[in-house]
Image (tube, rainbow, N blue to C red; front, side, top):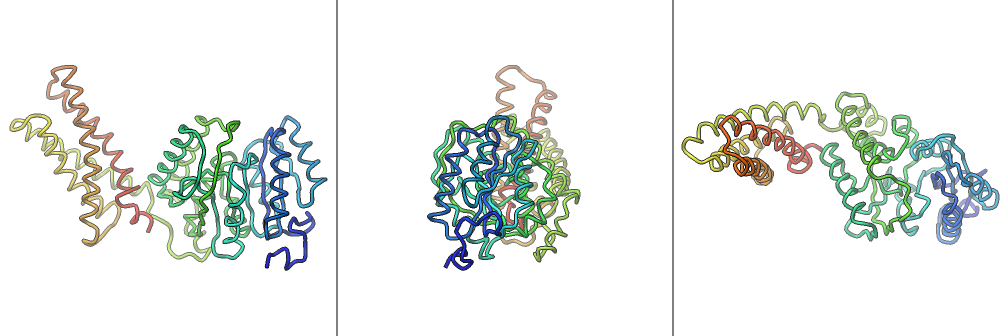
Amino acid sequence: MSAAAVEGTHPLAPTSLSPAVDIVVPVHNEATDLEPSIRRLHTYLHEQFPFSARITIADNASTDGTWEIATRLADELTGVRAEHLPAKGRGRALKQAWGTSDATVLAYMDVDLSTDLGALLPLVAPLLSGHSDVAIGTRLARSARVSRGAKREIISRCYNLFLHAILTTRFSDAQCGFKAIRADRAEVLLPLVEDDAWFFDTELLVLAERSGLRIHEVPVDWVDDPDSRVDIVPTALEDLRGVLRIGRHLSNGALPVAELRRTFGRAGDGRTGLVRQAVRFATIGVLSTLAYLLLFVTLHPLLDAQAANLVALATTAVANTAANRRWTFAVRGREGAGRHQAQGLLVFGAALALTSGSLAVLHLISAPSRGVELTVLLAANLVATALRFVALRGWVFRRAVQA
């Protein structure tokens, strides 16, 4: 039996009653799409959604007729309200609307309704039942059906891989505009979210995950809006800056992860700090690089440059993986050691391609001296070292980092 039936109310609760779900639709200059989208969502909720619900239109600083349309819809349709903010920002709009809501579950979706509405019930049901704390739509699951251009697909996947590698996140899709959170969880987390724009989603999810909250993922049917207002390159740069800020705050204790986990009754104190791991990895990397250069200089009189590079790099790669396994990522015992070395050798293959490629290009364009060879190899090896850290942290020892 639905919550609406139990309460004896219309599925779209009047704004004077507390609904089970408050669905926020943040908008900025959406005079064309707003009315048809809200009417479509309203009809769906009225006819197919089993819980009491409210639609909140959060207009953030529109300069066209968006606010006038929003107020008219709020006056005309049961269970629709409108809020106006004087400044732009999706994160700002969600903080305001969610922060003033009296619903049990707080959700949001993009005004273009790119995500099929059939995913709304699977999104909020685990939160209403208490099974999960946060729910997200994911376009990157195998069972998701997505229609969008190659450029957006590549950027989305690269961004989420970057999150996995740097912040060791487990959720698959940080930026799908289709999410929900229990109100009691949002009350604790929202004051800690700094971003007021597009990075808001990622920051909230990282905080939730590090706090030990359960994140439920729903594969969605999603169709790209060709009239999307998102400026991809500036947004991507802002997101990258946000990732680095979160990583810094997690490592220096600026975010009270341990306190949050205690608040939510979750065991443990979060994951090993990124900076501490980076320092240990860098120390091992410096020693490995010195050993590599020493081996290369020693072997070069006996072997050609490529063979000397191969032997020196392979030897130090095995030792490097073993050292990082033990000291950087705190993996003890023999279990998984063979797999870790095998994966480490794959990473070594990428490093070999980079350093060997650098040598090959150098010898194609000139007859370099030993000093020039060493300089080029040192530069290539430093780049390869950075790539190794990302690969070891985000792939080889990911389970240990997440433990």
